[in-house]
Length: 466
Image (cartoon, rainbow, N blue to C red):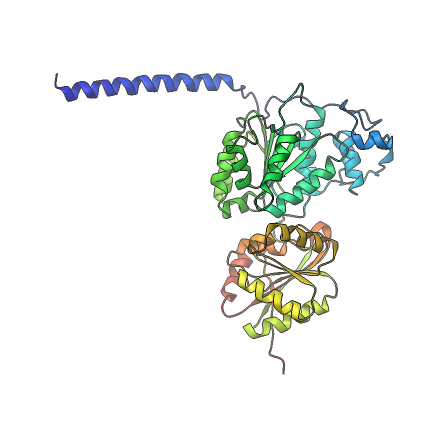
């Protein structure tokens, strides 16, 4: 036999042997996975809570209650039944979660909460379509926290093995989710840790080393860095939340997120909740890939934008923009305003002009340090700053109530960004206003924006004033 035929035969034998081994390993992996007998994974049943005290779950008494001696009862949280509304009382939540909800001033579920909590509290995976300002953050946090309280970890576990993982595309959004998680876990022993880029790496590393980590709220890059260095281990995660998946896609984070998801348990062994304001084909494919027989919920109206927002487009020349903007802000009094521009240099120039006009303002863009951005947002929230000038990436992380006016100084290059921009106002049932400037350079975007939101926008031609 020629030598090259002998070599080929040996190669084929090796390939066949490898295929048999791979087939055997695959069968072993399949056998190790739980059988899928239905649309819901085999999960522990919800516990019935004794509505007499905050300690109905049987877990340790939170330190805050030990110190104050306060014993809370569901009787302290009186909410009348209203037709068409779902009370948090009706969801069999742990008392300590209900107490936190009461302290936060909530009584009835928002639409997304009422639609998702009955399923997620039972352990179903979820694909949810909802815009910001709908209460989706509390929706996934309440489900996750309730499950962790009902079923505390038995025995010892290392600090850096979190039970819950929430991934968000921007630092600002991650920090705001973490803030809400802190409020909802106030009367529990659960610990929330945020891992975000642009902030003190060593401080976050020390938290992972010295504190029990129950919930991690993170941006993809920083989380992947810690995970690859074994500073945080994701193989015991019980629940994964992916928030604003469409934005993670557009910002190029999906490769990082895929790497992170591979570090978590198989989708049949974890609960996964994915939220997105829009569902392009790529996001739909990822949602199917990462979830296990999910429930699908959409609370987005037929018009993609909020009906509570009065939208108008002013067709102007470039030299009309500044005087009209100045007049708008002055007429708006001390009300909160966000101005969006497409480029950093535009935000910088606008910020300088506003300051020269003695308008209380600040800037949010990629060139502003993370520490300063966090402080700026806090001041905007408490009313110390009236006007924010922002780019799309920085502005997506702004989740502040009672913003009365949004101005698009330049129309966004992507129609989806228009939806996200004006979504900063008209939140929580309040009325808001959106004003957009359109010049001959960008007015071609108007039909695309209207097609995206499924509605026409009122246009007003602004004449030069004598």
